[in-house]
Length: 168
Image (cartoon, rainbow, N blue to C red; front, top):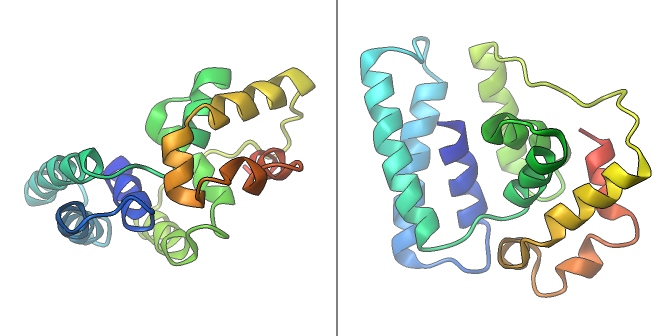
């Protein structure tokens, strides 16, 4: 469900949007938000809604692209072996400048459900790890272009990407 939420917010905030993908993403978001705002997230109806949202979100992202969250998440998975959705959630700690409304909404849903999102606070990255995190993120050109434009390397250069990773 949270991966679907993140797929959809990246799609709806990207440059490669289209009407069909937007409609699917919006409906998937409505379903996901309803589930994560509910008191019984694991109820039968809520699980059905999450399955439906997942399907709709998958179709939405097939017609668009993810953005900044997923490339950074993929880097965490590559360098540290972090599970995909856990890595996505960890990345949300640094994403406020890029998705401010969604950042606040995400953390409100986390609070509502009492979910603990891991942190990398206090981890001292080696230079090799920082370089691997950076290269493992920047290889995702199409999603990063979707999020930041064709000049994404400059937008994430000058230590910015390493700064984002240090916020996790």
